[in-house]
Amino acid sequence: MPTEQPAQQPTAELDARYSSALNPRPGAADVVATEWAEALRQLQAAEIFWLSTVRPDGRLHVTPVIAAWQDGVLYFSTGPTEQKAKNLAHDAHCALTTGGNALTEGLDLVVEGTAEQVADPARLEEVITAYEAKYGAHITSPEGTFHGIGDAFRKGDAVVFAVAPGTAYGFGRDDGVYTHTRWTF
Image (cartoon, rainbow, N blue to C red; front, side):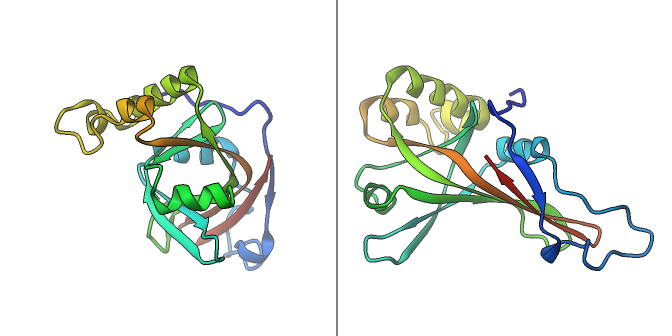
């Protein structure tokens, strides 16, 4: 899938409090904010995201989901009676997080925004196409983990949510150099 750019590029800001810019290694290159293009590549490639929502009583709910980036928006789905759907009906603010578990390498990403339920059939077809392109046999093969998800979207057996980033964060680690980038949209 080609790298898609949002209509407006976010503003990137390096937070020196959490970056190696505070205490650079001798001989290390200048520490700079991570480019949005790199974060976008990671969002498009990530297979699992952790969705954080808030229950009506204020307690957090965190659960893994699959998600696809399409036209500047992250899409994910859930069953209409699942906890995350109930939480989003009460408070649509959420965060989707992805990345690795290594201390010395990788880029962890957090996308914060407001989830909006997708009901438009044409848009649902675009999301289905994005899911199929990204997850391939997991969705398209009869043996796939999420086989039939497209039909579930079409019938309303699964609800689809769109999260346009309001703010995103990148926490990079590369050979002892750490970066904390904030992107504002």
